[in-house]
Picture 1: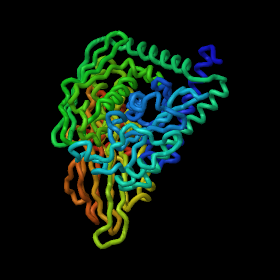
Picture 2: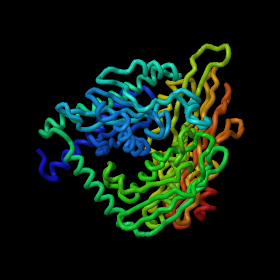
Picture 3: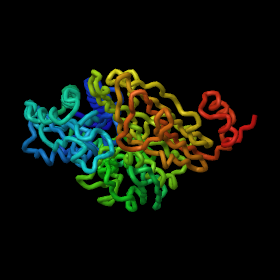
Picture 4: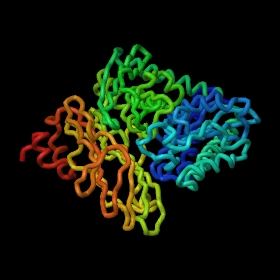
Length: 547
């Protein structure tokens, strides 16, 4: 029986290992490339009250921080009296889960001696959920795909065959989607197995005292970190591309002792297209951005999230009402950290980086054979990243996903899934914003349908009209662009076609620079020239380097 802080710390560390194995099971068994190649997932352990006490490092903040709220919805909707051993629950409700229909959240109760002691939860992005496909063109959530309310995927071990039939009848890749559902359930089962072994080893019947300890310690550490930030009220605004019109994002950050509140009043209203964001996702990324800067060493759990009070006016684009279209809620959601960090930089100028590309440049491709040619229609999804903003003491990262943290699928794995060829994938010279510390570079990607095929793609890109801004005298990063290889300019959002023989060329945006470029060390400029990160003209014009 644990009786000391050391005992609790040892068990806390073991819980992290438990949920990491939980996530690894999902990666190894998933059918969708978005999960097994890119790590677009989350996994975590919750106590019997629905409070998250441990999360896997593998996964995205948008998933895990939104899932931290969703488990409470599961307990309420299912009802404690209806929770049984070997049950598995499921939903992809954007407002009860993690923000859009492509994310499926699965929750499994954990029992010991016939008593409910906790719940494991996991989320994964499935490539296809029916409807219009992953893209921004829907006008309400009903167009965007199949909605699964909070319900039982398995009742005391018996999987709902009715649910599986409904899923199969509504998606284009039924084997893949159903396979992912089983993978999610297996993920939680793996977590339960390891937790039971841990409890056996320590000779305890539940995790209540451990949960209370984790939440109390994490909450106290987070509040102490907030109290070290200079008190005050800080404002920031940011313009982003939106779909058919620019979006104005605004935040007021109020810090008073151990209290912190971020209020997004003044943000644009909802769009008629699928760029809207449920408030749960806004909270997830606002908390993440603030926590990265203020309390990065505190483990992420219920205790460390509660001190951050995040609100947005209902009906604004960051707190969309049902049934608004929300398919690509990640685009604005991934830009939320830039907004809150811009306000926080006024209080912590030596900590906060410049703005980055931030939003993933996801592309969903629907490839099909030309009329009269044999072949199978295929859905493909690629995750691609631009450059991050420069930090106050170091350059930004090139082609790196921040804040989402997902990996890019390998070209080889993507080409095995469907009939496309990726001809080019390289860093884009000069795309990082100039500064004493340079912004990270974007990348250029060329994609062509295989012989005998054409494809449509759903564009969901940002930072084309509004590139990442530098900080403290740093220059902005390069804007992104979407075009065909013949020079035809395409839109940053919406469904578009690439015919046989054409190539799609994506130029991803770079991150903003930090500090006066004329203060950059000469040896760093020379190293950038050698590496091909900047041109000779840039070195002379922006950095003042003379031969």
